[in-house]
Length: 329
Ligand code: UFG
Image 1 (spheres, rainbow, N blue to C red):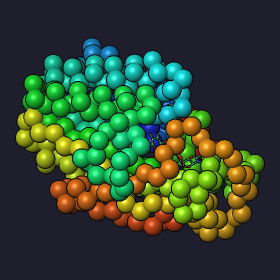
Image 2: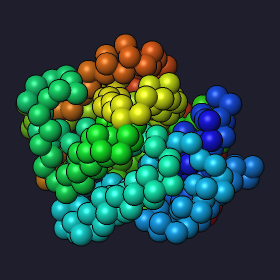
Image 3: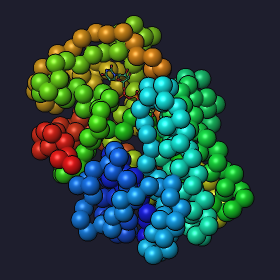
Image 4: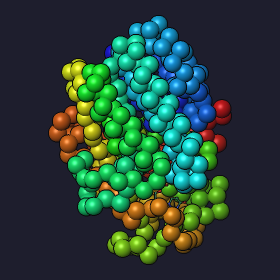
């Protein structure tokens, strides 16, 4: 399958490009490199440095490359910033995605795989989170993702778009061979920050809140390996053959890990001591988020290869050791 990977130079997108190649598909990358890294994508993959919201340019790529399916990973994903600068999030995550979908429909490309998030659930009504729970985001980031989900349903009904929206839990880890990995600027995610604290690149790791109603008082999250996420995107292809079909899947391992457990796991994997400072709660952090992803496992045959968070951290550590400064571009 010829696949346009929008945001293919970003963290999850670049891992998916590699998985597509490994599975014998032909990825083409579109990325404006605002957050992506050119060197995260192999030289033999066609690469377009442009905006996803430009119908003329994107239309031309769809036609010339004979694209059959579009995967969309390009979004702003800083929850706190989405609260202080919501227009940026509505513009990039919703309006530009709408333009992309319109361009696809206008060019007869009607298969779409979308990166959604467990942030669409807000404070979940029950745990583990199943797809049928009420979605009630508590920040503009989650809201823009939910808005796209709703747009997809309407486009499937009206225009025969077939789609899958994957609600990711906490993407983590790096390619097994250490060649590509996580490099955000600024970095806000727990695992890379704890690794930086272990190596002395940061002074310490601040635990945001130690008085939550959880077993050790710190927040519980569901860390899922980026290559496991990527494989689900390919496993769904067969289901998108039917025009107008739409699917929503949670992607997480189902195992909650606390902030303290992550710190301990990083110490165990690296053999280094992590300096810890206990800090105030971070606004907008739900105490616990973890997935029931049995739907993806049953319907897609999705297999979770990295079940133990230490195995996920080991891949992040390998990437860190081979790229201590991240990507050089
Ligand atoms: N944390 C700390 N100290 C830090 C950084 C994080 O204690 O320095 C804690 C957070 O409070 C949270 C946990 O570690 O309890 C994980 O935090 P991350 O920022 O790594 O991830 P989040 O769960 O907040 O958010 C992630 C993505 C979001 C996405 C969300 C749900 O960053 O983009 O998952 O999909 F919205």
